[in-house]
Image (cartoon, rainbow, N blue to C red; front, top):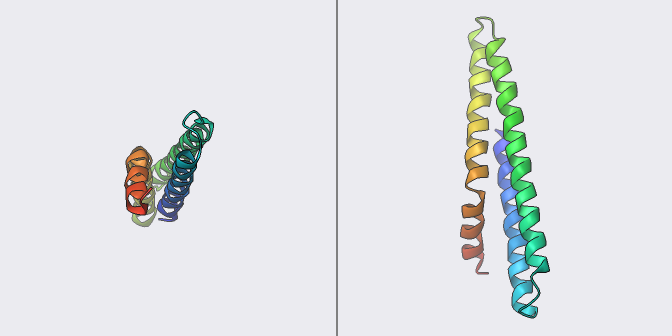
Length: 108
């Protein structure tokens, strides 16, 4: 379940960076889009890392499930890991939407 916490922390960081970029864009001249581009690139990198982390957990969960060998406890642990990886994929897919919602709530 801690992978979901890591994903949420990544989204909060992305939202904070987007808010800072929005505040800078208001104070900066109209032609200064470099900071916006850096923030956008950084957000894309964070989402990529979230997807990579979810893929790692999906792989670990699949291996645990396959190697359970009839042990119901180990099979359930593999299923839980796969479920958490699916939640991670969902959060990574919804990251841009969640960042926009956080920007709206924060007021930037």
